[in-house]
Length: 390
Ligand code: COI
Image 1 (cartoon, rainbow, N blue to C red):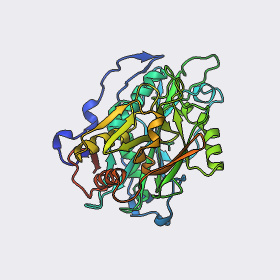
Image 2 (image 1 turned 90 degrees about the vertical axis):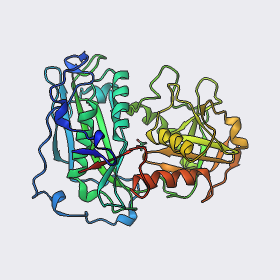
Image 3 (image 1 turned 120 degrees about the vertical axis):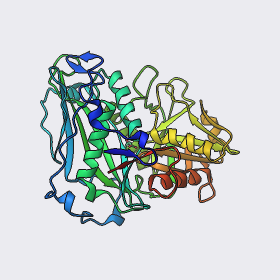
Image 4 (image 1 turned 180 degrees about the vertical axis):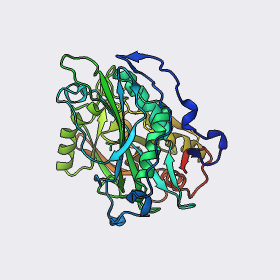
């Protein structure tokens, strides 16, 4: 069962949604289809049930793929809707060369983390419903059926439990869950795929950037944009990521950590970096670009806004943030599930380099401590964000 830490009212029982009918049909696959019965648990004989920890060096985790034991997958066919799904050994999947995802990019992904509580040693997920709902939003945009919130949560929970020996010890990192929703049915002409696969795999991770927790250095993208109005910049489609690779490589070649993109209409307003959202702080006013269709509505971004208000910041603004504001900002930081909260040491724009405060007294550091304290079970979870996995 999935259980909110502080409220029995939030108990999620998968069988309670059994048999709910679909709302819309897409070639027979429901666009918010429900998952039904609970999945079988792994037998005790499986390695993940026996060992407390996998035999790896937990002090050396970065953000590279460390294959784990099991992955979850459920199919959605025209006739049957979403299957109940199952755990299988982690490994390659078979795809038709004509799969919609391979030919027309009909694919979405998510990223969320499971932690081992410093307090109880139990396993905690951070706001998984937010990812479930964002996947549904993206699926609607790409004309894909999406798993119900219940199926999403069930799949994530089962993936964590099956791979529990890969959840890092407290303070060493997290188990990163990567849900995928893919058009796996074959198409040739441009059309939605006739069949979909919802898959969740996992990898233990540490810091995203090679800088670790040290400041990162950004470069403003020059004539290259991540998203356009009316496009799909606000959904986590796989198609939003390959187009930034070239700019990212160029930035790295010049010694920067990441690219920060401007809006494609005015070439003036901050949008986001290739893998994270951005916040700018000036005189205790915190601003982040408003999500107006071109920016990913990050779960960490949303949580930062909430935490900052809770910490007493009077002005936390979601608005247009002009690149001109970078010249006299006190502080800049980036946020994301993978990135967590990364202090920005400098941003370079048209050969001008702006430098920012970093270190233990900064707003970013306060927010980082507040967020990770909740995630690791060190601080009270007053917002009921953590979902404990029994
Ligand atoms: C995440 O933060 O979870 C993401 O999906 C970003 C990805 C580029 C690693």
